[in-house]
Length: 387
Image (cartoon, rainbow, N blue to C red; front, side, top):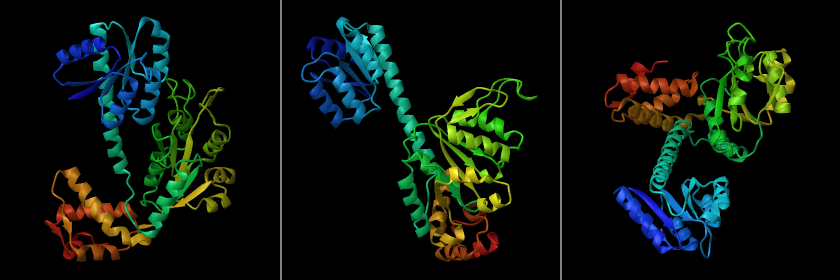
């Protein structure tokens, strides 16, 4: 059932709109308000899928109402109803975020098409929110140990700033989770977060991957291609394993950070970019600098904020929480009931030396779930999770 609110001071027009919408679909629940003030009160106290709003009204006009609604419930599509003398104002409302406007007297087909389109948009917004929550859940940081709580506090302080962040820690510790949390809690969360695994891209292709190329720049460059920095414009770029980046690419990244511009391979034209850079590495970059493999000036540009992610051995108290989290997640993926781990099984797993960190723990939990009975026992751990 789609809830629609009509805000219109002329009772005759309200009746016409209610009749049209009620006859169009039984799934439309239509309510009305006679002025902007009462309409705003209804919007504050109820959830609507669409608002049809007159522009010229007593107490509060449509423009004022639109601005107020966009502050409190920006996801509600608003269609403005304009008289012939209100067309310039109607166009102004589009710039302020109105979905569309219709003229008085309303054309039946135009009205119904606009309503359908607006409701479709609202549904997409809802679906995107649900999807985003699922994505956010997949990057949830599990743990209540002191090192993890310290990282959560750091993220809370740093996320809303534009400061660059360098995340360090061994492989498999969850550095990408920290990067995603920084992005999702930032003011750039609505824009893309583009991930680049610098270790997985051949050195001869890394510059093209990051900065793009023009047609003919090299043998396989058959057309112009934007790079990752351009794709992340307005959002965040996550340079994972940056310690494996070539010195040539490092120099170009340094320029991008200093001047906020990139140049595609084979081009001579600069492209302005607005990105926040988060980097991660499992290497000791100061050692890399001393041995001439990493630029010191780039390090200082990246390491405005340093976040060190601990190994799993440094946060053994989080292992029970992680086991339960992975068990629930694996059961959801496989469409099966959640298997329980006995206390003695969990205690034994806490004693293991987790050289592969969280990634290794997740694999072991999945192996135990597949090979064991309904409850994973200490004996199952000894049989199937031997180190």
